[in-house]
Image: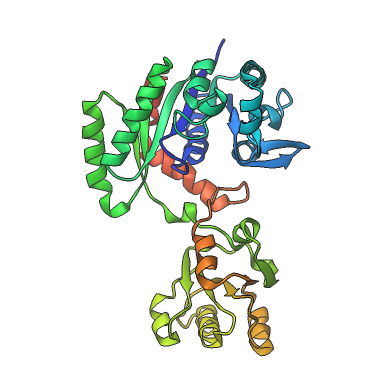
Length: 369
């Protein structure tokens, strides 16, 4: 018997496809004994088992343990869009080869499954340049689509309707939409108007999910992985979560108003006044005398502070990092990072499970698959 199929797409990058995929697998396990996962086309990949595999597939496999002897990680991520992939395809189109590769991997995974979760790579049109848009892949696999959008009222509805039209042009049914990352102080208003607005268009709203900053918060380790910064000390604490960022460019007495827990301090290496203030805040927290927990310090401009300051930071265990770029560009690099949930992010994964269970109407999904 063929499994039920859900294709997860989004109106834009980083709207939360993988978060929803992960949460749905947890939630739907109560109804389906054997769930499979595939991301047919991946753009951010890792080297696993000697092959290039999309990092989202690695996350799902490691966390949900849905891969078995019948399929390998490569089947969960059959097509890796490497650098130069698009140019090679335009020079030598091989549409049927890619399609057959996807179908072969899908068949390996789908065998014996009750439900298949298929994750796309963005909006309905992504992949058109090599003849495998999300809409085309969903049609090829015979899947209904759940579309993820983020934010407010007007823009998400416009983008949802545009994507709906592209999927329907390929004969793909839109099962419903999930509006993600809604600011908590606007949640009630946005939830009400999104539901009213999409009801007028005949679109099922399957959930409206609040924004949880912790899901987008990097660890110090992730910042190091995604940049060319150098770790000077505190390597044992690089898994510290970074929930707040403070650029130490003001006078210390003014900076005190902006210190928050799990703070990353970005400051020139010669601002020893900021560094000593940072240390005093961290030690006060440890002694339960107020203060805040400092997740890490990035020194900018390639400037080292006095050795005595470095030694105090080393003894504190706060990760100390050196950037050879200026403060503005260093802060911009950190701000612009795309943070993905990793298998070791247990707290985030548990939060995803809780969020999807609380804010997505699983019964409505089951009624419409």
